[in-house]
Length: 342
Image 1 (tube, rainbow, N blue to C red):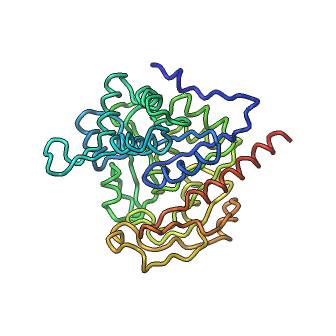
Image 2 (cartoon, rainbow, N blue to C red):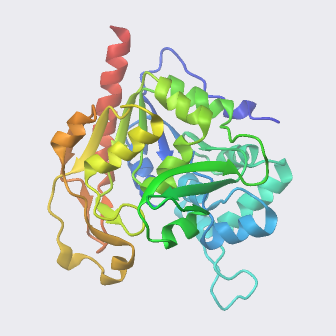
Image 3 (cartoon, rainbow, N blue to C red):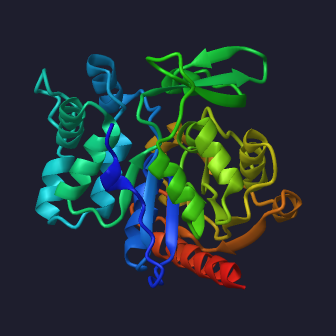
């Protein structure tokens, strides 16, 4: 198995902060796009337990790590033209029975996985073709299945099935979908975390985009052991079936419990009021209400709190303002670099 081209090489004379972002979903590319403008050396570690939509369909048919989140991250860090990005992101119309709903990029990733024999090398090859500024690493080289235990003691497997239960989740863990061996991250993933100045979790679905990565045993251990500033970007809205009525402190508490200690050094929290009149009613199916602030609770979790108007609601949806978030991340990364020199 290769991955020599993916090794994270550190040049001592470089002053670029090393930032690792771990997660999945739609929030991750927003932050990565903004970090590109901050002259950081970026490594994106992307979840591989998605089993819905085009990704889930491809995963079921050809036994590949779900490509959707990887596709979006590659585009966010790519230096190719916008026209080329649009082609890569194009999703076939529903009238096309065979290709219906599939993104061209997902099919390309699946083809490269077959050519290389594994998803890790496939993504590195595609990163070179797309002139990616940074590194994109799947969290695992094998498809993973997300498992959850609910407060009532019942257990469910599968990301989509877990969220459809509409029950309070107690804990989650991951298993190799096709193997009996324990899930593991590849060495370049661990190297990136250990050598980072800042390790960023989120934004993204707490139980289905962030925790699946941290529950890979050696990846979670790297986050516990790293000297980097560990930053959590708290979601702006609560999410139906996952974080119903959660405060920002409850988000951090869940991560810390899964990691077995107080490992979140800094939490970025939106402090601005959300204009609910601009909120698209169709999205109430997924998002319930703004995440409540509990700054005292966050500090009790051992986390510093940085709060600002972090929202961008121009589209009617509620996203993070990537530029503001990226600037805070870079400031924290530089501070961590300075502490290392002391």
